[in-house]
Length: 248
Image (tube, rainbow, N blue to C red; front, side, top):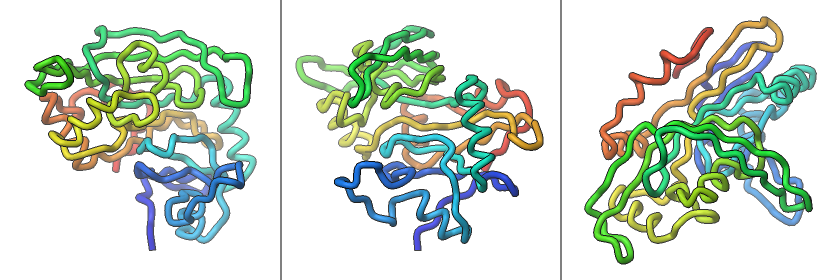
């Protein structure tokens, strides 16, 4: 039986490490079926023996910290934090090309079922730029950037669409990305996964009021990526957080 890695749990909430390729919950569109074996809500409800309430979403292709509430009133309090901008998500991503040292992407995005774009803002900081002897197309070398990303809003595929808007698509993105660079990463690094990690989630505990930061665990794929960039993540993120950090 599939089980999810629990990063934090108390009587009010539980945080897990969502694997890439897993859905948060069944899609609302009944025309799309999804196996319970890759449905985080079904897996964790069975694992804990109780019904759970999703607090937020992650794209199916994205891995990282995912929180569920154990009661509906706790989920409602989390929604208030999301609306007030208190809940902070920090991502890591690999993109094509060399990004600026830091930047803010302020570009409205439209949902599939909505005619009018909504404001969408993403902050990013470039951690490393590299140029590799990987021939792609008419170029004999390839450039990539490792970025830390903090979305201010939460639109559908926001990070993926925002970096594609800058002509710096995420590696492994089969929808908004560059298939040639996805293929070379598959050949050289041994992965066709989306290189987007929801690494940490910082929030105020809805009952105790404590400031918490829950962080994900780096897997073998990301260690290969960090080796490629000559980067050590453990020297950077923890020093930026206030409150208590929950690390696996």
